[in-house]
Length: 367
Image 1 (tube, rainbow, N blue to C red):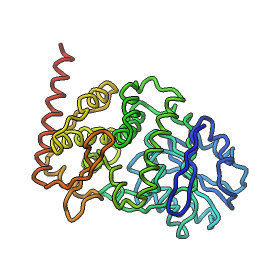
Image 2 (cartoon, rainbow, N blue to C red; image 1 turned 30 degrees about the vertical axis):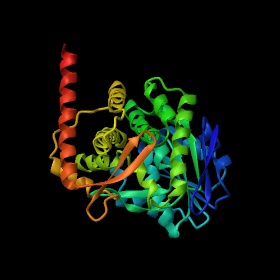
Image 3 (tube, helix red, strand yellow; image 1 turned 60 degrees about the horizontal axis):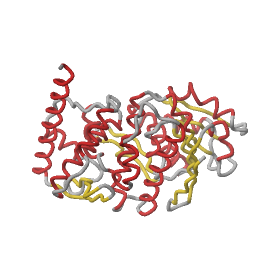
Image 4 (cartoon, rainbow, N blue to C red; image 1 turned 90 degrees about the horizontal axis):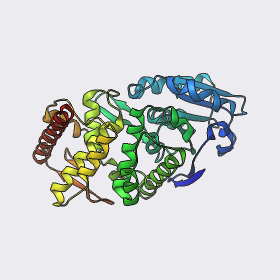
């Protein structure tokens, strides 16, 4: 098992990563609690809820399942969790456990942050993607017009990451999670980037997963500890997300996975970075790796103006000016304000290039 400590402004919390941890949940609790509410989703509950409940000796253990998917990350689900907490009699010495992927972690964390003005919660991620969202203390729900617009900074009391729960993920979810690992590697670690470029996502095993996840979490923790509330450096974690979030909003939450659209956003950021800094970045290598691992790279035809408008609703936008996270090189991110005119041209060029690449791929397949 690997353990990483994350320093938040209010407290330091442990991130434990290993196998079989869900059967020993109580061993990883930071203190005794008067009662515990486990929030999970309809899919995860069938696999792992009974394991976690059986691992807790507290007599006052309750559970609540929310719908699966990004569409559940809304004000109605948030209110449901609050109602369940009240009905179960949770007090200020109670604990809420988020057992699931990023959606469960975000909405449950936001509920914990606001229930009685804040009680402890623990993240128990069950997806690769959630390695990113479970660390750093960002909790939120979506608004119909923008992703993660309603939320708070609220650090968990602990993160318990049982990699055995990742073995039930489908290929789509594995791809989604590894897009965030790729983002972290591009931001801060050339060695991790090189390792990922050699990784076949269809042949992962426990120790490789643990190593990749630990490294990704360490990168995120290092950034968050310096800038927990996103005053500067933490904005770099938005690499690939300004376009990715815009596309999520356009397509409707849940039609593509978050990571699949982040992957598109990473390619876009690499191309814009090459133009902005007149440098060569590994666009071709990243594109080939994504393609070889079956990431969907063909976008439907979209109005560039609509994409630009959605990008401007991103939380990193200041005074209606888009701040895009770019790369001067692997491990050298930078924040650049780009005019609407230039960004619109970048979007049009990128759409054209991706369409041409898709058509060329189809022609080669037919031959």
